Image (cartoon, one colour):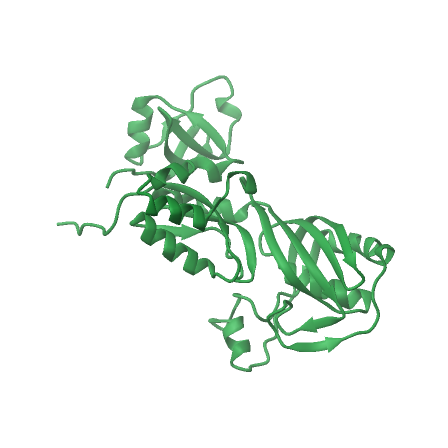
Length: 305
């Protein structure tokens, strides 16, 4: 006899505006309790000192997390010049200082070096694993963590504001695995003035943006008032914005639900290929790959209890 899952079968995405000084794991735990949900996850960890978009996946939405994680990110961040820290943010100990300060012209001239595909050394205080251990755990234990540079893609990096000689505000559009703290550190080194991040906000993760975000306070207030918290949820398929959508018949939906492939109908069927998801009667049925005129399901969605 199957063991009954604890909690409610909640499904969908919550676009959380994560508060300052809260870990992503803590945010997930709070929301799982508020929704009394069976299964909850998140797409793309945010540091405790960062705020902004943290997509939370409930139930069947967790099957689409890889697509959300791969989505382009937009960050707004403030760099303080003159000081480099061991964590590359305001939390760490000072490791280097410099007296000089860059001009706007100095900064603008540097930005092209940090766009496109570049090699970046992640901060040693990061979640990257070294011999099975998280780098930040080793660094906190006093070990000398050395991380190899790796390729990242920064589509755009622009200077937004210069409040004073000591600080500058930037916006970056970048791909998976890019560390904004490392951008600040490396810009400071290149400018000869050192630097670290003192404020960081994620404004977008793929299709998840500030426009459809809600705060934890809003959700807690709604829960206290006895309101239906599912009204804050976005559809499971929201994470699949770049994936081809197919509308299928009830019979094809039934076949996909059983893990069986279906033939793609329509004039463009022979030339279609790659990832796709099937919808029927307004509900996502399956996610799969199109090959030789057929959709082969790789993930099937079950919205039952």
